[in-house]
Image (cartoon, rainbow, N blue to C red):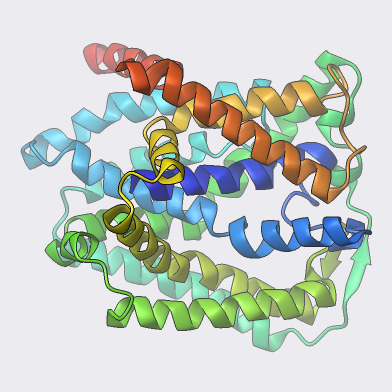
Length: 379
């Protein structure tokens, strides 16, 4: 699970770096800006390997982590134990969103835990499945209705938020003011109101309470019925993303129409079916190649997710903000991908050698623990 989380954070670096470069509308998708062969390769890697594969894994593992953190507690104590930890994460997320990265997702994760998941850890299995069923039904019924009911032609136009992103502002105070609005719309509300994230966290809670889940990770098999079915659906959703994406859904312009509606159905399906496949893959790799350097580095990153996430934002802010080095809008997709990969590798090496390799707690996790203790004492 640490390696899977590390891989997810690599995807976060790739996707977020594109958004730092040209704004939110072209963060995940900007096929219309991929003008060279290297740019097109970078776009395909971003869209089909990382986008909507990385954040789902983090949300799912957040739910798993809630169960692991509270497995020795009596049920009445679970909610109080998690309150301080995720109130601290909420404050870190808000500060991160206002000062560094308006697309912050930490605050939304904290809201999901504080309002639902910390209670769900102590619910009966039937109650968890009932809420999951409601979330799944609402999400896929709405998306399927639009996918098959919308036959309108493709319409695209300039996206104001993409063209006037806060990173393009030369004045730091102006950028912070606009960034606050972007954080509220794209970061906090955009993520916290998305039922997919709620379902993924709750799915992690439900799986972590199942003995079959842990048995599968101990003895991973690609021929497990759930893994086979997920792989088949993932192949379909990825092919649909490719087809409808190139037909207009992968655009930095604000596009609408039937093609986009059908793309959204595939985009909503991918997060749920990629998790069994990726977890099985990393469980198999951990058994087959337990000392592989690349796998161990991913595991190190997975043990320091907050440090890696905040570190990425600091590096990208310095590189892309017009207030600092001002690379915003000046790089192609391939150049941004290269920066994201280098940033991830350098931060991973720093975390591994400087902290985990010496038995020390990385700075992000140390801050989180200190704040959590303060909230717990006050409660």
